[in-house]
Amino acid sequence: MSDPVWYRSLYWRIAVGFVALLATLLIAQGLVFAWMTGRMTDVFPSRSPVQVAAAMAEDVADALADPAAPDIPAYLSSRYSGSFRGWVVALADGRVFESQRVPPPPTLDRTARARLSAESADLDPDRVRNRGRGGRGDGGRGDGGRGASARAGGAPDGRGWRSGFFGGRGGSSEPAVEYARIVLDGQVVGVVAVPVEAPPLSVTLRALGPTLAVVALALLAAGTAVAALVIARPTRRRLQQLQQAAVALGSGQPGVRAPESGGDEVTSLSRAFNTMASQLDSRAAALEQADRTRRQLLADVSHELMTPLSAIRGYVETLSMDDLRLDDAARSRYLGIVNEEAGRLEHIIGDLLDLARLEGGGGTFREERVSIDQLLERVRDRHGPILSEKAIALTTRRDPSVDGVRGDPNRLEQALQNLVANALRHTPPGGAVTVEATAVENGVTIAVQDTGPGIPLEHLPHLFDRFYKVDESRAGTDVPSGSGLGLSIVRAIVGRHGGTVTASNAPDGGARFEIVLPRFVAQ
View 1 (cartoon, rainbow, N blue to C red):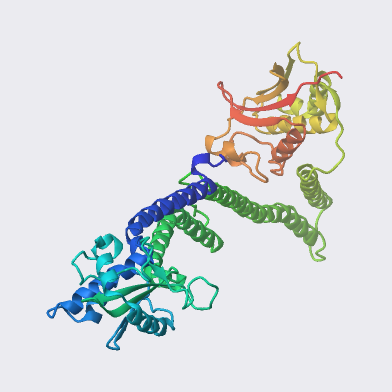
View 2 (cartoon, rainbow, N blue to C red):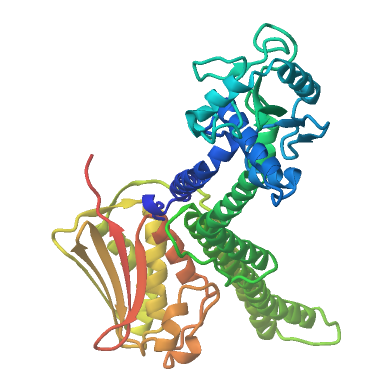
């Protein structure tokens, strides 16, 4: 299973996605800030309170002097609606106008009226007229007497005047205020009062808060959408597919697999899931095959045991019949058959027990040097009577380079005896059986070949299965068939020795079995 590709890693993609998201948000916020700086002059006016008061006083004076001028409150609200400063205009006729967007301090209207009363009593028309010729920069209009003075107390330095009497900066609880007199035809007709302090933060938040909130929500939505599309959506889709595959596998669909596209951790998880699913399929198939084998084994064992038991029972019942008169020859023949079937039954049971021990890894198993010459000699001695009876020639050959193999001598002799007995059983009278030991790479091959009819090709893959017989396909033999367990025992013995056994048909006819065993190496 390959590791995730680093640039496709889910963690790497999440990190890069969030960095890109933060960069995008910073760029967007910078653009929004640059756009909103154009509005900052409204929130934080570039003109000082003195200049704002002087400009308002001049505009009110112009409005009062012009009969066709619009309504003063509407005029001031429209002209100064963008200013984020509170103000109060107090006129001599008793009218008082206040800013609506930014409410002035609660006592500013009272202090403005008091200032108007004080300034009306102390005004010198000639001084006001002379100071009014300084132009708009110092609060005058230069019109010889109709302008509005933005100066208080005759201060010639152009700084205007503050209300020290009504708070100023002398430590009173009243806020500092800038005043400008509204002068019309040499008479003070009103006062404009503008607080010195900047507008409160709540005013700024009310002005810019909605815009900033909308922009922040839009950026948040956009960032969330981008993160979902780039990070979450592909991962979520593949996780859903993996979940569906897991549910399908749990419901009994063995062939389901999760997609392995991509190169991140989800892909690794999908590959691990598919590996697990494949192993489960293999194990399920093995269990199914084992179950079939078990049922087939029970059927075969029942069949193989039933045949001799039925024969034994039949002949015993026959011999025990009182009304049946049997001569001594018939009785002896029946008893011989019973004894033969009992021996056959004992042989089958012994082979089954032996095969179970071998395949289960049990039983005593020695490991020592086994001489090939001794194996071949014992095979010849064991089958001498049947060789003479059927006139079969048994030839044994050994490669001079082959001396011995490593294993259990009794078990190896048992395996070789079974192969030779099987060859003799299917070799017609006058035939030949050859046992040959040759050297191969890191091992020794012992081949048993006969001159019988050979093995049909369709039976070759099943020769080493339990109780599998092809005697009916190998005509021309008079030797009774075995239990069908001999070749299975051969395979189990050779497997315990770390070797292999195969079956094939010889080129010149007959069957050929080959055992490959590890060569003995002196320690």
